[in-house]
Image (tube, rainbow over all chains, first blue to last red; front, side):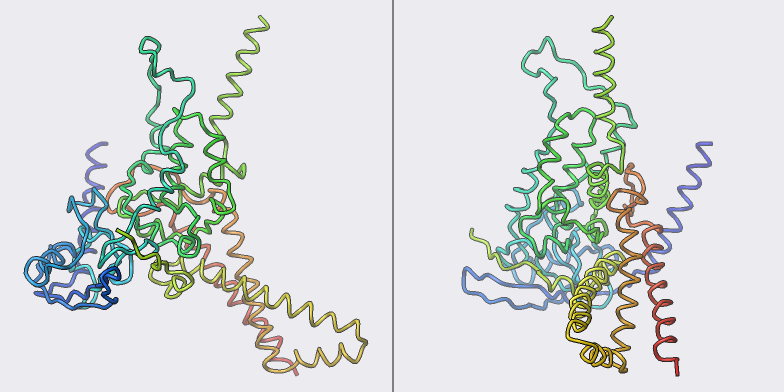
Length: 285
Length: 145
């Protein structure tokens, strides 16, 4: 049984690799069209074109770092891990928000790669944007487990938070968010409403809402139930299409809204009611 | 370092909806048809209010719609209302978390479960229904005597 599953997965992967390589174009060099601006220093927005050598495995970040190292050291860029884990190198590549370290030049069409700062983030310099507001929205949804029954001060009373694998699967994918801001940049509502928390923050609200260790359900709903809150999402799906980690923020937002609208069963509420009934019956006896 | 605040896409972000896939095109069309239907609703209220000024004013107003331009506008209204209703039904369910799939353990290449074939089929059905309604409307409006 296990071998059959492994075989199936391998054949699917081979098929996908074949499809992917079919789309790749092998070039020896590309022209990077880099957005340059430093309004603080009086430098007006313009594009600099730099030709860089590339291999099949060259990422846009590799190409940018080559340009920075050998052609123009003044290019402003933020990056860190180079392996799609830190979420620092988000930028618009050929008009779509992507991670520069996760985008191979060979996957892109044309011999010119246009790199611009992420839209909807305040611009600092060249490809660098300010994430303060984005992190503030994330902070506002209280992204941590809240449980008033857990006495973390008294070590003797400490007990485990029991959680089954099924309970874990309900929120695990949303906890893979690396806060790269690509979803925030792609969202059409964020583009017109600065107070809208954005897909990242709202999906994190769902991540903790559905976590069975958390019991701040009412508080979490009150935070997102605002005229600039969850109701302003119109399911354009752009956040999920650009997410590099499969978090699928649009899914989290719609599921949270489903709970708020009563489309979905609120398992926590049911468990709470069952607990109260059980306690009432015990008290009667 | 002080950041430049003028980096929001604003309504310009609506342009080129194709870069994010069919769901973004559907979002764009839903908004566009919504605005179009609102404009039609205002025009329609204005048109029917001419009844209060007597039968002659009403007949004169009706004549305005019996022109090729009037028929083309009505045809657009048929298409807009059909698409907006059909896609709106899909969105009501999607906004309630229905038809989107379940959260799981994401694996490479991290395709989003919410952007699934059910949603794409819903968008296509809305587009096809709008096209069929417009074809029927055109046959009635332009195919008569």
